[in-house]
Amino acid sequence: MLTFLKKLFYIFVPLEETPIRKIFKNHTPEQVLVAHHEAGHIMGALYLGIEVKNCQIYLNQSGQWEGKTEYNYGYSKPYLELMIKIKQGKDVLTESNIQPITKAGIIRYSVAIAGPIAELKHINGSSIDDLETYRNGSDKDACWAVIDFFKQTGLHKPDMENDFRSHIVNLFDRPHSWEALQTLACRILTANNHQISPSEIKQIIQPKHLLI
Image 1 (cartoon, helix red, strand yellow):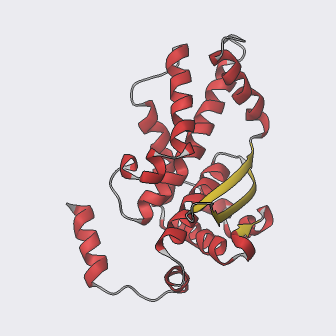
Image 2 (cartoon, rainbow, N blue to C red; image 1 turned 180 degrees about the vertical axis):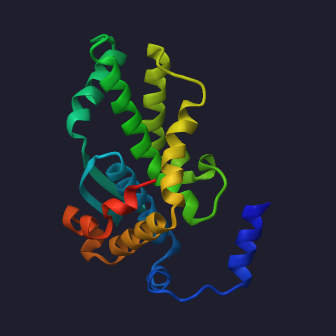
Image 3 (tube, rainbow, N blue to C red; image 1 turned 135 degrees about the vertical axis):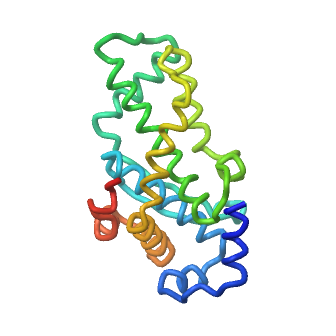
């Protein structure tokens, strides 16, 4: 009910014409949505200590906007690769690798889900599963791969997914953090070829924006 009333408010009560909203108005709703989605991935990654190498949104061959963000998973990368080997039966979970593998899985899930969470917040939506970009996209595949691995190895716990998501939701619910994310989305929209570099990201997303 509250979400419905908020939508009515935005329809009937004109919003202040801020620089951010002016930029959003100069682009299609689909562009703005994809920019928020990728900005969410970036902020989620930085919050979890993952380096962002590159981000770009572009028109695909079907004439639809989509985005791609590349990461440097650093110390987590070999454990993400080990997860795949264990799932394929080519390696095993041990006492020495169980903790870093669990941490790597949480990071992978959280970075993947951060995009849809930002998209959902932008449209004042109620459920990630209602997003077509999530239902039919690679983020869902990444999240399910992690959860499937946890279930296969006995690492899964009740409400695990909600716990992962809540950290990202709480981060984006902070006004200063959300404003920084929207500023980042604007920069993606206005950048040359809609592509931004790590140095540009650092100018916008500062440590204070990553604190809950």
